[in-house]
Length: 376
Ligand code: DGJ
Image 1 (cartoon, rainbow, N blue to C red):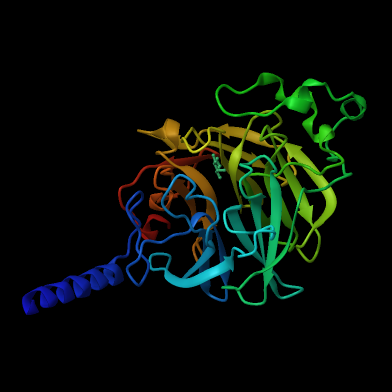
Image 2: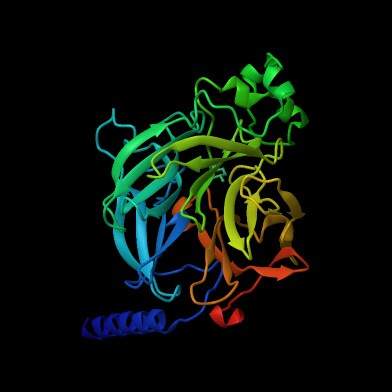
């Protein structure tokens, strides 16, 4: 008994020492937090605030509905990007069945930004109502005075009812919505070529636009944007946020019409905006896409699949969620992705890879292990 206790103690000490020692990224391997528990922050987003990185993500659990929100959104902090300290549940689901964020709803792809004017931390996510799958395609907002939370629920809604995107032609505006648009929903398989002619944004003009996979981006001038898969996922919308980041100005653009982009991740380098997104195949991985623009609203020029080598066609068996700028290094960006595991969602792994730039294109190459010295 005494021997067993001693060996357990040694394993614990050794484990903790290894975690403290580890100064590399190992894509696809289980990543432990500083207390030795696997990091549970899926489809995450990152915020750098007062010399510290914060990682927010979906807390997943085992089981067929383990990717739904039974707990909420977690928060971890780090100063070196290798070691992450668990800060707790930043935004919690609600116990009351009638509450919009009741246990079992969907809180997907949460992202947090900081508002310099109001001094508030604002969380946005893709929201869907408990037990209704992804059909409501809504947006949620919560807010906090402290970066690690607790975040207070603000509201859920469909974006921009009554507003037209600014980059559509008069002809498109005047064309009637085809009957087919009423019943159109994309459930996977080959992509419907006609999606863009169905005028789904017009179908949804009065109810508000559909909003599923999403990210937030704050530009150098402090203006923030919500980028989300809309129109039954066929087209991305890029919408400018109001000064308090709690709503919109009403100005928004359509991008990549009919291309069925999910998992958008945006970053800026040398005045250009880059996007890495996925295709639309549920939890199954697909080939990433990339694009560049000199304004966030576009026009965007597609640059193709940035992945190279084995498993390039499945984004190395993962789907992106964020591109994380590394502080204190020039042009250093990390592509952050999730390797989904639908049969055991909490065991989804993280795939972090350096973004390389080659002949004005983006490049992602697999690495079993790497560290920040990869960047100049
Ligand atoms: C792919 C999306 O990117 C995920 O966030 C999630 O919504 C799954 N589809 C659900 O199938």
